[in-house]
Length: 444
Image (cartoon, rainbow, N blue to C red; front, side):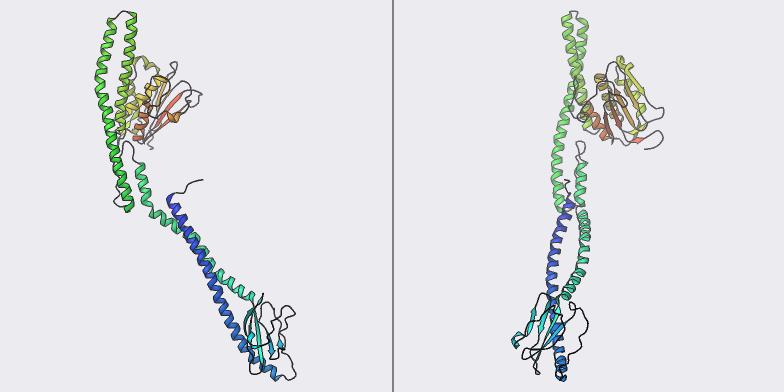
């Protein structure tokens, strides 16, 4: 189940709270409306009874023959019905109810007032001077219909308020929580190469405090990272000269020794010093990558840079293994030239070290600001883990080359893509780097 973000949670819970209040208002409104309508209908029923009683009593007294008023045609379920009763309890006049209902007897004055049956609300008057009382009944269906129409007229606009409330509360929540999204965006831009303080001067007080805590944490983290980088850089610098001197002396010693056993040991020592020299170089590159060397506001012709870098980093014995495919037109990309040299040098060295010795290494660029370095060899699984620091496969590598490349490429605003097998083949490995820049046709 997808988790709701903070603005969605505020919108949901606020709307639910308003819905509870809305339901309570509906219940209260229905109770008040029914009570008020009952009071109004009862008042009308009583007033009508008191108006009809003298009229019907007068007609009864004037009709000495006991003739009854003509019975109108009406629906008994929707009309008022009446019964005129004498003091002796006998019915003097009544509407023909067709046996569908019976009004309660009124034997004495104490029965005057309101009563309710299943379908009618009945009002009985007291006996007047002529000795007559009137029972007047109004159908409950009319009252229920009036109540339903009144509630419907109230509920329709209230129902329309629910989606409007959801939209309004959602808009308010998004506006109110906009500083939270800005804070998240600011935090997401911070990494090992950027730990500057977050400016929270225009945000609410709570976020100012959170940003202040984060700024303090990043300040301490910056100090720790700078100390680590300074140590790695200083150590690499301090080791580079002694390693170079020791390597030179070992190579000189090798020319002076003729014993096969001693030559074997000297060669092993030379290999160890060569490995240490490469490690020192990687540590220096890592320190530069951590310092953010890849970013550049100027565009460079990476096609020309590729030729210069390959001429400098590829050993003479391996030059014939490089298959270069570069366009004639410039390929412009925004990356520091030294950083590009570090990236290309690491990729070519990895290809020479881990690629198939029977196949060449392809280095191509374009169309667009793209660099590709591919080599033969078995298919590599778990490509996502390769750029991690100190993540390495079988061999004598250090697990730093691809990590340094990815870090520099990201600093330049680009993207590093790993492919295995090679496109169109069932084996091999390729690193494709997408940089920001201008293609030869002028497109970005």
